Amino acid sequence: MTKVLLVEDHEELWDFLSRRLTRRGFEVIVAQDGQEGVDKARAERPDVILMDMNLPVMDGWTAARTLRADPATGRIPIIALTAHAMSGDRDKMIEAGCTDYHPKPVDFPRLLSQIEAVMLAAEE
Image (cartoon, rainbow, N blue to C red):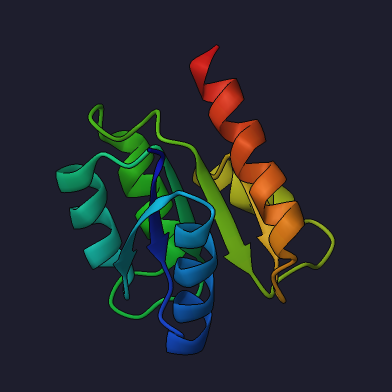
């Protein structure tokens, strides 16, 4: 079973995504701020991380850099979830350590294919 760490502070979105991902056969772990996301990534070793970039305590940019710098979590694919879909934002997210990004509002079928794609790439 694929383990997904969902780092999202908006309850409606994490509730929606965790229920839909669970129905698709994923094991979902939820963190509600960046620091909790880093801690859970280290403890749970998820297969993929879905990370909101605007988080309390530690933002998603810092959390992604922290995870990339840690040998224990540095290879876990991170998909940024963000309302920031401006020109150049994708490059900034990749630079921060994200593998890919998904603009909000979430397009669930597209998100599923992105999860599949980053996991396949991580296996190579």
